[in-house]
Structure formats: structure tokens, C-alpha cells
Image 1 (cartoon, one colour):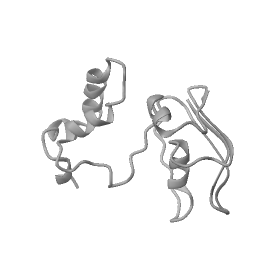
Image 2: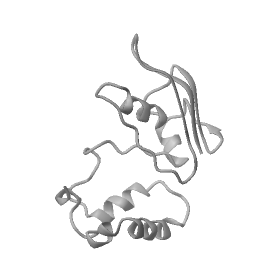
Image 3: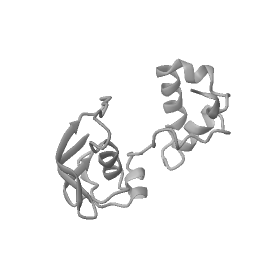
Image 4: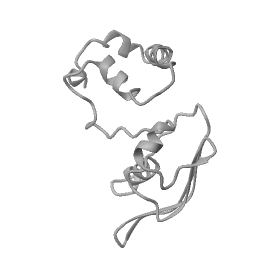
Length: 135
């Protein structure tokens, strides 16, 4: 589903990613771990189109998405949620989830919301609670 090959990303002349490759099959849940400055956020920003790769390829569902603008990548189903900064704290948990589905054009959003609630029961319990009150 997601294939990253020999990815390189730079900040000016500083190479932040060098020859990074990863395969993520459909349905997989993957964690990226590493020390501060290892390139975790840079990798995710590059995949999401926030940063442009200098070299390598990024394929999602068989399509090359490297170099597409972030909104184009988002429409294809790849989203970046920055740690701790993207939650709209005054909105409810449910409203935040609905915002995440805003750009979707299909009609499966209600069914997908139910699947999310089934997978994470605490979200169902707290769906009307302000998101900013979660720890």
C-alpha cells in the first residue's frame, strides 16, 4: 500500500533523510521510533507532501505521490496529524474525527466512524467530550 524507496530529503544543504526505504502493507499499523533528530518527523512530512524529496520515490496504492502538493496527497488518503498540535481543543472528540474526514468524497464516512469507535471504545465513551480535555 505504501512504498518508500531510497528517499532523501534536505533542509537547505543539510541532508535529513538518506536512502530511507519502507514498505507498509494495507491494514498494517506501524510505529516509527528513533532518537530526537533521527528524521521521524521529516519522513512523515515528506510522505505527506509538506516537504519535497530530493531523491527517491513514494508510492501509495501503486501511484507515485512524491512531488504532489499536500492537498493532493490528502485526497488520496494520506494524512499527517502533528503530535499534540492538530487537535481542535474546543471541539468534541467526534467533531475532530469528522474534521479528519472533511476532504473525503465517498459516503463511507459514517461506517468508518463506527469502525473507529469499535476499535477504540474510549472514543465512543468520550465522543461528546471536548478534545482538549483528553490527556
